[in-house]
Length: 477
Image (cartoon, rainbow, N blue to C red; front, side, top):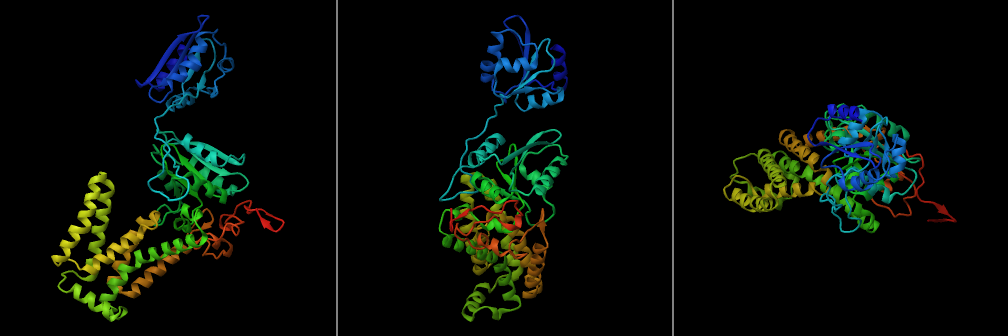
């Protein structure tokens, strides 16, 4: 036993790794090695130390497991793997005279309660959200999908952090080729540490330098389970409340969990409104610049006279004016996100009212330009997951509009569409089901059809079992 303790302490010499030695009823020596702060010492004492101290010392690891009747215990394979378990919060039980040891599952890590995520607030629907503890997140998924087809594969990533990364999928539904590819990519990750699931997302993306995201994200178990039922694969990382979903399609970001708790007509209007808002966010500032510099006749005469009166005396050109205001908008957003809550509230009022009104009165910018930028910024947050990408594209459109006018806007639009059409991830086109055209999948993309129509899973995901709504006696159940 002493040699085993020395071998463990040689690898884990830190002061928070404790060795507690005690004697069994027959005088046999035992010891428990654990990491302070992440081990449930109450359970360790009641379920391990007390039973062993009141009975004869076991002669082997198997006998110790039977004597303890501990729900989570297994034999330690070797010293390095035992050290990994100790660092994860699972103590190592050693018995003098017995080869090997026993790993005890008494991990206890401080974690926040399961609450509604701030990034996915809904009026109707479940309000549970993932937290930073992977075991709790796996339990939330299992609670909603108590099916033997649900599979969890846990991998360790990071030379120093040894972060647990879990791959979840439904056997018989998800494409096995996609599952194997994702697991191989995760196993191939060679990095010091994985603080968040976003690190894993970079390695799972087939085009890491792409401006558009290639991995879906969610913080809600109900959304994740719905995606698993469609044939996707989920990736959870310990320490992160954000789950990854693959394969990813751009149409996912225009969907909301609340769409499935309201009527199909309301959900369809909401999705079309989001598409319109994205177009307004990207194109409105650019067309405003192009209309002033090149094609003023694009505007109605009454509106043209109003704008002309508002821009008189402005020292900046229309393109520089819009570009400057968009940069100011991004600065205000960054400051509001990172400042304390109440300071950010005051800053937003100052930025929107005081600075804007003062800038117009001082003749630095025009009132129409402020309205255009404000409407564009608000519209981009109708699709929060695309807000960062839209802000970059919006700046690019303003630049080309100021240089080439409407021709530049059309050219850049064609280039972006070509890039999106030619992009895919794990064999699934990014613009599916519109390119390529998959008519059946339209029922849950740009518009939301009735539940009775959604009897098959998305064909773009290539699920092994496409039927999700049974048909019996001419009626769907």
